[in-house]
Length: 150
Image (cartoon, rainbow, N blue to C red; front, side, top):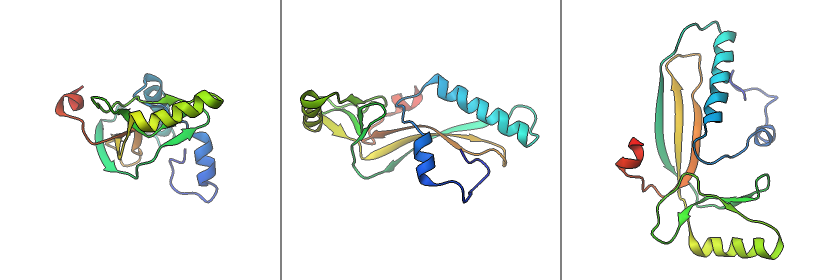
């Protein structure tokens, strides 16, 4: 993670290798971010608690489903076609050979691809602390007020 700004030594390939997509909100992600901010505050001599804003946004993205080798899952669907409800944790495990091929084919028949990206961003109210994306997942921009208030 390059929190001090751009650097020639940072390449997209290095960043991709260090990232893992984990759907949904997870306590351990927030714990890891807490540790990142604690070390960053210590490095810059920032004392005391810093207020933060937790913001959400949705932006249109290209409809795309991809296979993630690390977890053997398909990412890009946001839920089943029948009585569709977008789900922040929707993943499909592929599996091996013929069964895996059938799962992929069935996935495109029975599920909906998200064409929006739902993002939750942590924004500390201090100029030396960076904003970080906490959660990102595909959606169809169909969340209602009840979901936002959860």
